[in-house]
Amino acid sequence: MSTSKLITISLMVALAFLLSQIWLYHFPQGGAVTPGAMVPLLLVAFRYGAKEGALAGFLFGLFQIIQDPFILHPVQVLFDYPLPFMAMGLAGFFPQRIFLATALAFVGRFACHFISGVVFFASYAPEGVSPVIYSLSVNATYIVPEMLICLVLLKFLPVERLLAAMDKNSR
Image (cartoon, rainbow, N blue to C red; front, side):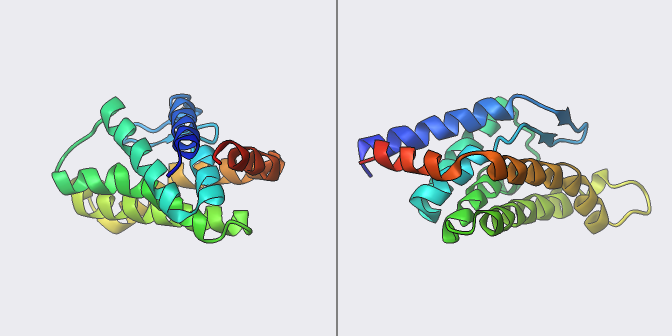
């Protein structure tokens, strides 16, 4: 990996982390809606591919666990921090179809948080509510709006110009 590419990825991770600190809404049980914090990670995946996108997501997940950890179990840490953000790298499989790629990445992220919710946060479900339904509803309340915000931003941002600038800087 070239130094320029590494610097570009680092800057995009830093931008994603900065945007993740601006909450449009923060849910009491965890999770937040941000002004498109995942867009920089998606751009990394679009430009450099799934592997580099997953690397950027992994680094972002490490920053998240340092900034705002909620740890119940070591395996839960994997499903709530590095893995869901590494899933954003899935967008690198369809870089020419950014809306499909974005949806795929968010489905991967949702799956990780959903599994964590069912396995590790089942005791938080209200009496009589299935852990599956609880995890589905809790995670959908912030991941779906986050995905919609990212899709809207990607619709209006000059994505091709941004990707070209990233490519130009990483040679």
